[in-house]
Length: 328
Ligand SMILES: C[S@@+](CC[C@H](N)C(=O)[O-])C[C@H]1O[C@@H](n2cnc3c(N)ncnc32)[C@H](O)[C@@H]1O
Image (cartoon, rainbow, N blue to C red):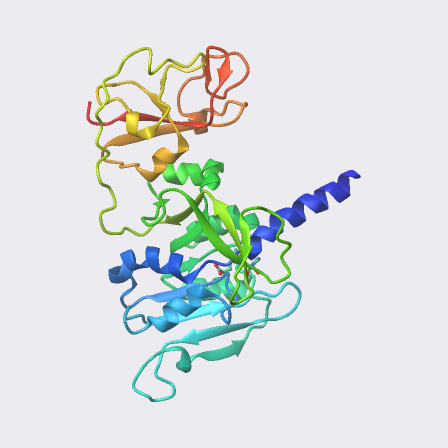
């Protein structure tokens, strides 16, 4: 395969993940924790085909229950102009505000979340709730911060390692949602999606296709109930179980629940620590995941020679987040 072809292939593989549709049950399980927040808010679903999206379905069905002010969703077209749907008033005068009160309006542009028209809508909205395209996740978050927007979006845990996103996690400006802490989730895929993997299935009744995805998490900057339960620590520090890294002045903790309760120094913990992270209990100093050392990301001095990944007795460990117990 020549270079351009292989790049195209990689790109196509990445973009396929842009068409994974979130299921209503997963949406309900997370959004129930934000009911109070949604009151009198304008919600924008800006990466949704509203006629097919369960984000649109969820908000249009629950418009009155959540006491929403307005619901807007734009539809994205690659190369032609598109449209938006809106609900805000009891248009059909049946005494209820729901899907039947939808107004459809043509857009002048293609509904790209970065288009001036969609940015105008973003500016009029209080919060964005959706599953953005995987390949544009970084750009998507950057835009939300640029326009100072609240959001609840679903994505992959691995995006924590993007420099900009990790910085926001470290500064406690973005956190994981409440309903997904582990395991995989099933997403619906388009009918023409090639189902080759063992983690996929066709529903025998509807004929619709589904793929299971690992490492799914909600990302948000909206506070929800019981955000920070304390992680109960029970293990006493000992040298043999918590060895020091060859290249950092920090000890290695294999499993988050085993973080020693009496260790005052820096500890390297697995990425899934973020599911349990309570900023009143721990401080995140940085993260080491790649071979090149970047002081801003790693957060503590590098004491090795070349490889900046966490190493113990010459063996490279998985990516680690460096933390300190704040209460010791
Ligand atoms: C991961 S899918 C999720 C769809 C829907 N939000 C859901 O969860 O069911 C991302 C959607 O974003 C759309 N999309 C891709 N690029 C986009 C862009 N630049 N602006 C807006 N939407 C885009 C895709 O067509 C796709 O439908």
